[in-house]
Length: 594
Image 1 (tube, rainbow, N blue to C red):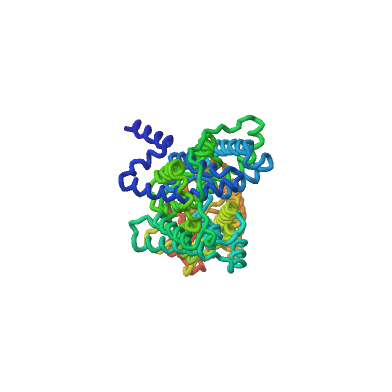
Image 2: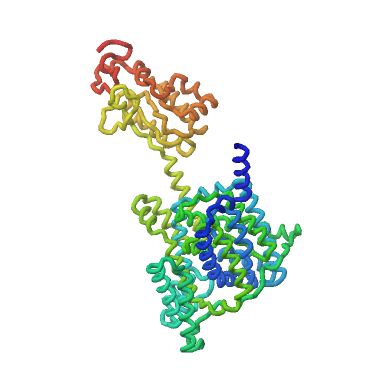
């Protein structure tokens, strides 16, 4: 039985699609089929546009949305991530390769394919080395902020197509808004009416006919409306642009240039594209997983993306990653398994082979309206509202990430959010709570409660430390212990309730040893109660117990107060009225009756 389980686990690691394949029944297949068809329609103009941005022939953008999409779906961990060409990677490729070869030339294409192969190798190695843990530093709040910002960018990028105005490709968000304001009098009413008709029909179909694929219905209505306007007024008057005819053949086999000279020339760029592609893919996968409540395996996602780019480089595909538009659309269209992404690639191939000329009738303003719907659906208003009302620091992270996405760069926004999250995390962990406590009032209780509202012992201070004592927290904990002397110099002995201390490093151990020696010189001592075994063993292995004192450690449910009670000054106890310990009520330290 154990051998069978081990064999299954091995198969799941090598062929991760075996995990979700049992979920595919007739209903799931139909749903994924519809989602895949929708995705194939949307990727037609996007692939052409992205390839143009990258300096490649238009068909290469479509090739990048076929084989890489299938491989990434089968070997990744996300059920909704759809891989393919992206804006950011297209821009980086053009900027890095165009100085080395003429864009669109055979040499340019060869260098891009080599770059794609190297990116895939780097990604695969990182996945096999289990470096997917890096994605844990992308917090939930960062993902929500990034998603919201990217959604706004998706909508902003379609403003020119929605209103029929001239905005330079690749313009920043603020420039798009400025151009919209400047050109508001030049809005094309025919183009805008097609976009509005598509948008309105999508909203209405989704609300009143939920069983009908609202995006496909909206596309059909928008296309028919555009044809009607062209027939009534003529395309010379309407200026409604369409996708245009596409080449009718499958991705040809290609061979990257793997000579040492070319590899050396492209390796540094490949590493940069690797980090960008992985950041995009995993961030998008996690952002969709927040909505679908699915767990993402970062290591498997790295492997899936790596294999996708390696295979893609041999089938004329340039570097791909997770596509925000297509992934969001895939989820919004109701996809249940990665089979939807596979269907999307197959439908795209079928479209090229069978109905490529019909793509000339797909109006671009209708596609802009569809992307408006996708962008709106990706903004997580519920969680944004929750974060805004529960955590000021998380709100700062969210809106910093969102604004960075809009006004800086898409990929840089993630780095900003991650760095800010880490800074806030370190700020919190570097100041663990040091809370004064007193013995609980219940008879026979071994617990301690907050000292607020209770009388404390004038000679013996008890504190609970909630947090790890590492190099970043040493100064805060040390200052808190020194502050005990400043508030009450008679409290020479200190008991640390250590159940909340999960970790301690060398700096923390050195500080505690120093504090124990200091308090002994004062005539008191440093004691520990309920310290975790891992923390105690660390102190023991580091030989810090000698400085602290072996007798200063008390396990759970031991009477620590009785042991410390006899070390107190009996003269101070004679005049003390607090008497918070059970022993105080009958005797003085040393055994003298009261």
